[in-house]
Length: 117
Length: 146
Image (cartoon, rainbow over all chains, first blue to last red; front, side, top):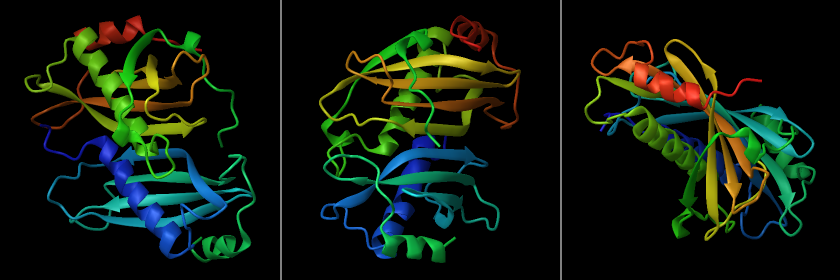
């Protein structure tokens, strides 16, 4: 209709890179880990429209490591190059799967986050 | 980060009831974070259409999202019904900041809240233009400033 990717979809792209990073780099097992990450906040700033069938590249770095939370800085790049079409962040807090209370970031995962900060 | 007090119903002058869908649940059995933004999109654009007379296909001036944020406080899950509360927190010359609260069932404290900034642009040139009069009048009706 408006010939651009809907704003909600940008968060789906953010989620895609964060979830893959958590699984492939930090070793998160969403169903079986006793302590696992949950989204507590996200933001997106839209700088210019992306449009299907453009290929989108997503970039991630660890912006802040707290006691129980990690903040990822994110950017989405379209096919036209170096400046991002959108930037934002995504905060995961580690919680106990049974009580849903926040828990310290498991040490092995903290080390991985430090590598990407 | 998200230590501020939860938003409450009395902070919103406009509401829209939405039904969560089976597909809104994710691997954790609760509404997926991205889906909240589709609730935001729904309440904002319904308001523009119903209260501001917006014609998404025909209007020369359209709202383009420039920034959105959501803070997630408590889980919601299908088949919970939700009320999306809407207010205008900031009304500029070419842009508006909507503030949205998502309430589960008849709860008074929001499960999630955030904002959505629209800048109004000429559909053909993509340049910012003053907020159309009919939208502006609708925004004034739900303008809440601290």
